[in-house]
Length: 432
View 1: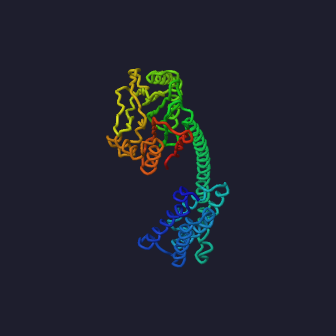
View 2: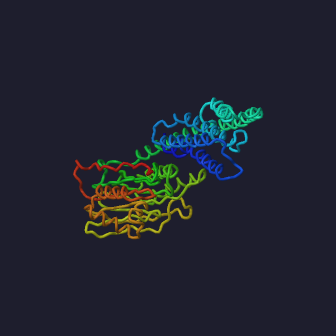
View 3: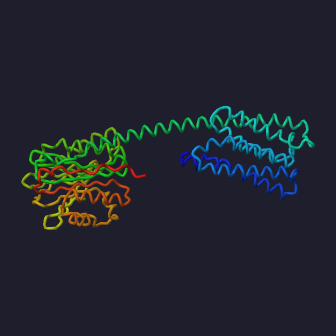
C-alpha cells in the first residue's frame, strides 16, 4: 500500500469516523435522559466490537495487503451498529442512521456486488432485534422500516459505487497522462544532455576546457557549448529565463543559431543571429529573453567576446588578478535594441576564462561578491578547469538551490595529448 493510500484511504482512516461516532453515541445514551440503554450486555458488546475493529484497522497500516482486511472490518462495523441499535431501543433507537457510514465505505470499493453487500449489512442492522431480543420482538412496522431503509441505503451505496468507479477511472487516466509526460521530459532531458560537448581532443587551440550543467528540473534553460572555428575555438554559456521543457527548447534553438555563425569571427554577429532566431519564434509563441556570453579564442591568444545581459564572466590571470568581463548590453529577445558590442583582449598562457549562470549565485548565498568567490575557488583548484567545475558541482550537491547551475571554464595552456579529453559532469536529476 502506497504512502498516499495509507494516509487518505487506509482502513484506519475509514474506520475512525465510525468508531468516533459510536463512542459519542454511547456517551449520549448514558448521559441524556431522553435516551436509554435497554440492554446493557448488548450495549457493552457493541463497544467491544467497535474497539476490535479500530485496533484491526490501526494494525492494518503495518501490513502490506491491508486492503484484504476491509471486508472483515465492514462485517464488524455492521455487527457493532446492529448491537448498538438493539441495545438502545431497537426500532425506537435514534442511531439507525449510523449504518450509512459502512454503507458508503462498502459502496466505494471495487465491484458492483458491494452494493448487495451494503444492503445485506443494513438488513442485519434492522433485523438484529428479532434474533437478539426474542422476548421483545419489534412489530410489523419494523419490516416496513427494513424495506425503506434497504432501498434508501442501497441507493446511496449504488451512487457511491458509480462515483467511485468514475473517480478511479479519472485517476488512472491522469496517472497514464503523467507517465507519458514524464517519459517525454526524460527524452527531452536526454536530448539536451546529448547536445553538451564532452571532449576537447580536436580543438584548434591549446586550451583545456570543462563545463557542467545541473538543471533544477530534468530539463533546464541553461546551456554551454564549445567548438572549433576557422581561427581557434568558440565558447558559449546561455541562460534562458525560466525552467523546464519550454526553456530547454529555447536553449537548444539559441545554441543552434549561435553555432550557425561558426565561420564568422565577430562574436556580436553570432548574438545577432540568435536574436533573429528568437524574433522569428516570437511570431508563433511567447519567447522569453535569454542572457548569453559568447567568446572566440584564436590560436595566438587573441580573445574576443560579446555579452548579452549575462555579466557573470571573468578572466583569472596567471598572476592571480581578476578581470571581470562587464557589459551594459541587453539580453536576447527583449526586442529593444538588437546590437551588441564585441570586446577584444588577450589570453596569456595560464589565464583562465570562467563564465557561469546566476544559479551559481545561490551556491554562495546570493552574495554580490560571488564573482570573487568563484575566482578564489579557481585559485584553490590551481586554475584547472576540470577541478573548478568539479568543485562547483560538488557545492551544488551540498547546497539547496532553485535555479539551474551551469559553469564553463577555459584555460589557455599547452596540454598533453593523452589528457586532452576532459570529462563533463552528467546532468543531475530533478530534486524531489
